[in-house]
Length: 342
Figure (cartoon, rainbow, N blue to C red):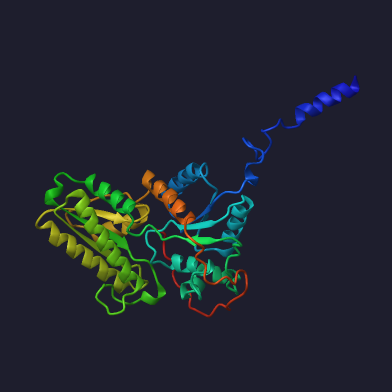
């Protein structure tokens, strides 16, 4: 009798087949090979950014293994996420930067640590990790094919979202002007240099400005607007340079507003932080402004999924495979202000 009672109690305590911890549906699902896994990288942001990315991860995790690392390319966190994807038996690692532009310090860091770039950039050492004991720079140990995709850049989804943001302000697009405004990525090499795409050797910020101008023209065509323009505000530590680009934007919008209604749209992942800067620069200027960034929008999730599947069909992109080995001692670059995430 006692033996029967004991067996009954054990039966209640043991998990039933298919309902054990970590195996809610298929007990062997984690052992099955997957064609690819996604490592999503982003700089971080406000509550809108967090809520939007949380929703994206919940949806996409149902379709393929995905990890998300936030911050300035922290090697330890990225390595941990890579190991998690390897444990899920993925056959290829697709790294997707959730960034506005491929011309950014974060992208340069990503290219180095995944072996697409030979040497790290000065910005790599200037980030906050240097003061936390990162004396040696290491690449990520992937041990599987790696594909690093481009950022959002001039993809169709970006122009679609920006067009919809502009149209939400519009009454008669054929009589209106659209101005896209972005905050320049903060490269050390660009500090103190004037913005403008006319220099013989364009900097990454110049290339970002050219990309934004191309997006503005696509928004004009897709929304049937009369005209369009773009402006890039400096994020330089030099107040004089920031004030100069603010004045250029103010002059541009004021001049356009003399002839037609002007709609201003931020080129940013979320609109909260950059909108403060843009609206401060445009104080007293007649225009209509959209406070939303690219997030939240279901089309960004669609872009991530499409980019992941395209990346899965791309060959291994690594050129430098000295994974995990110390490569350089961090030089004594001066500390710089870390750019806010937009």
